[in-house]
Image 1: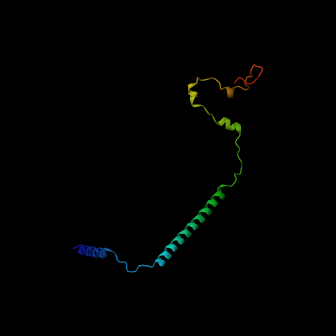
Image 2: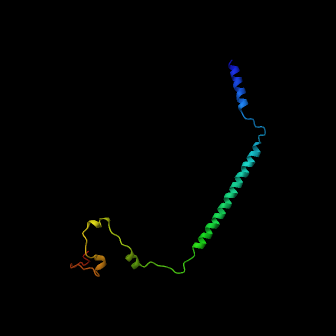
Image 3: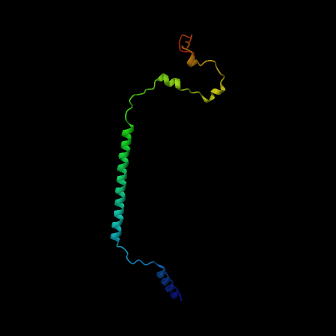
Length: 117
């Protein structure tokens, strides 16, 4: 009875199992896979070459030196930037900015000298 079940199961599996009539040899399959790999590799090499040429062309086109050179003057930089501390809103408003409005810093009256700030 057990052997009948085994035989029946074996027969059902063999019927359900797909049959391959023309299996290619291992060497033929390996050769085809290798060819596909080589073709993909060549395609990537061509793409990398074209991308490198395009990048070089873009760099050459946009990296030309400008006709006039611009320099940033320190005075222009100081006049165009302004920084305040976040805590400045807590301080009372003053009528003048000591660093911008006073032409000369007062000297100390002590013999060692130095500024009062």
